[in-house]
Image 1 (cartoon, rainbow, N blue to C red):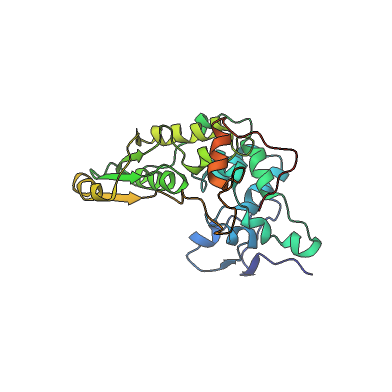
Image 2: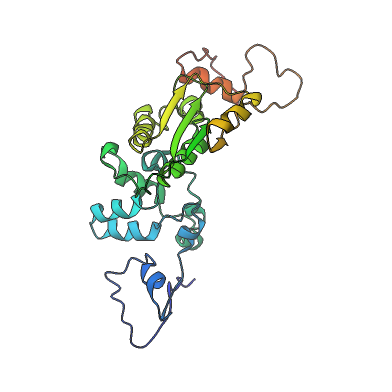
Length: 267
């Protein structure tokens, strides 16, 4: 199987130094003559954030981790979290996987760039001037954090209302510590606070309170997530020793996980 030609068409007067090109696509974006057409790699196309996977991998291969991190930070709102728990759709689309059955360990390389790095040193995104507008975000899980990030980045004053005593939603209460260390999550929350985002904890918002919130804030984003466990509706589901996934994970996260027998069945 032939590899895709990322440089699809070049005019005769254009020369690309392939030892320096990382296929970032910027030349194609700014070329006023439409002389350059660049096919994005399948891994980048598959990424919901459009992360320049092939770019930072090329830079790592050349030994330039500093530039690789800089490129990564351009499109990752929460690099610490996504280096740990990203679902890596890029690897499913990887050309190497089509050829050999094994994808490039793209998330692993991203994690390599982030691990050991002080997340407090990660530069904040370019911020728009203050808009004078206020926004409320209900919930501080992944969706709420992302909403707060984008609203703050565009210059709005953001307040996050969280029913629990700590931020993070399912990232805190459902994802095990070995998958996402709490210090990483807290560092990302601190980054939002550096962007001007305010957090109110123990602030459970009921449906009838949304109207008053709407009067106080210019916009209200409801990002409460899927906090209810999925039931199977089968006989014996409520017997002692049978646990639903989310409540069980929360008990473990709180250090109150039940003692389990030698044999365990996971459905």
